Image (cartoon, rainbow, N blue to C red; front, side, top):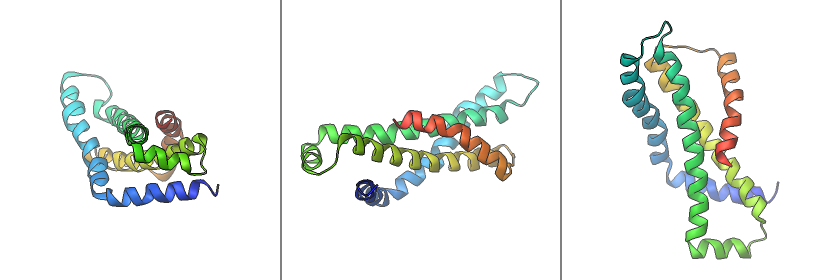
Length: 151
């Protein structure tokens, strides 16, 4: 675990530099998805159940998985394309497996933040309210998706 701490501290410093843009992404991506996809489709799809309630679950999964995928793939592309980045990593006493695990942890934490924002935004827009046990159960079920898209 001692090897992961410097890698995660480096990622934390990078996150602090881009915290405003990440917060805007967390905030605007679920709103944009809700306005551009869920609301127009709710006018077209007529069901006995309320479509917007079920589309909010799709928004949670979509925004969370895309956030996890984009964060982790951006890190690997950065390693691959920047020469100084790869040389510094090759000289460090860190294995490839440790780099992948640190990137997985970073992707999971950022997508978990996206998930929290998505639940808050869609439940506010749809006038839904969840208790702690429901949110915990949804988080446990969605954690498998987060790990899958982060790796």
